[in-house]
Image (cartoon, rainbow, N blue to C red; front, side):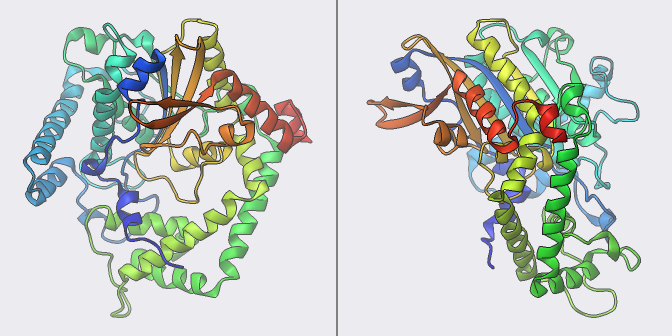
Length: 454
């Protein structure tokens, strides 16, 4: 098994590498089909954080934003890129001043949560670089979307924001919204949206979908057993894990790193902060870049197998039922011309995005990078009197390849003669049909509670 070295770069997703690609249809397509952007739903993974478990030399890692900006500014030769770094630096400085503007009185953070990340790397906490990632992401998405989405002053009534109950996702949501809204005036700050704490990591929304589900527990155990057996039965991977634990773990902590994910998390804590992985304490042996590539390739291979498994897809469909019912309700309100939020943010984790992507058959076996984003764009067309959906994942238009299009065969192709391009759009009513059909196919039920306990 081999992996592309670019996978390491993509996973870290450093702020200067965040860029827009296929977000928003081209302006000519708007004109030709008389389109109007009606709403955005954006689900993100939190930004760069410290490791989830204690690792060696944690205090030596450079995780503060100004050090990052200074380091990469020196490496940049292109003037326009240098200008971008200066803009990021000014934005981050203004973001740091938010605490002095008493935003903690505007945004109701849960008890014991810091509004802004601390300097340095701390276990399971967002770093300043992670906050900068979301500031940059929010700003760049605003540059693409804001003038199309908001025709007047933005108020908190236009925007809804959710976060899982972790400080790193709350802080990521705040940084994203700060970058997107770019508040300057007292009006901007007074109308800064509240961030609502969700139950769990899956945005299950209501007691029905948040309650314990026997079938989820059963399927999760099957998946855990499969993963454990896959590692134990593959000697090269098992040997690699035993070898790599010695480099990152303190002598008494090696049992903390018993999964491929835990080892990747530890190693990327060094790599994403431009630091060397420590050598073994009892030998002169050191980790190599080939070891890291082997680790990533092993994890990709395992998740690639999982992605195609019926059990995995069934599990994720149940996990994300509450979330998808929320967005189906939003789509229904749009088609019925009911007032809805124009912008909805869900700030979550990799374990949030993976099942979302799996339901849409868009999970490719690769763990989402820091500050990954899954975007649902909705449009109205005066030309067809229809409402549509478009899906973008990390800048790539994945609408056509989503299971919504593939399984329903009901997607619409917009052909732009002037641009000589084709764009796939999903009629909004098709999405509900897709989800209901898939749910019944996997669970043999049209009711979540019955599906959970059958």
